[in-house]
Amino acid sequence: MPGQKFGPAWFPGLIAFPEWMQRAQSRAAVIGVLAGLLFYILAADTLGFHLTAIAIVGLWVRILGASWRVTVAVGVLAPIVIHLAFYKLLRVPLPWGLLERWAF
Image (cartoon, rainbow, N blue to C red; front, side, top):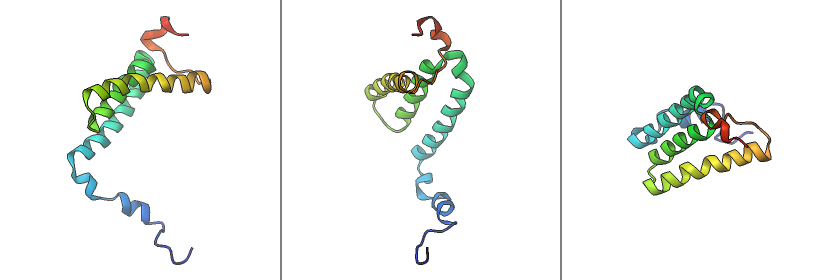
């Protein structure tokens, strides 16, 4: 639409070298998300969704600056909620891995 400042260069310009990338915590968060996704791809079939998600969510919450108490609580509760959403509501099977004998 004419007169708007949004165009094809808006999004690339928004993410290209912003000041938030100058902070170490922001860079660690971006690297943590990418590393967590790579870890999930490589480890989920062997370890299973639950153990892998506990590690990844715990890492992400801790990198974002949460206390250990919050990290442990969210790291344990979030995979349970995600499991219930995918496995029970959406009927999408998630890999059980090492916890196969306790699958329900």
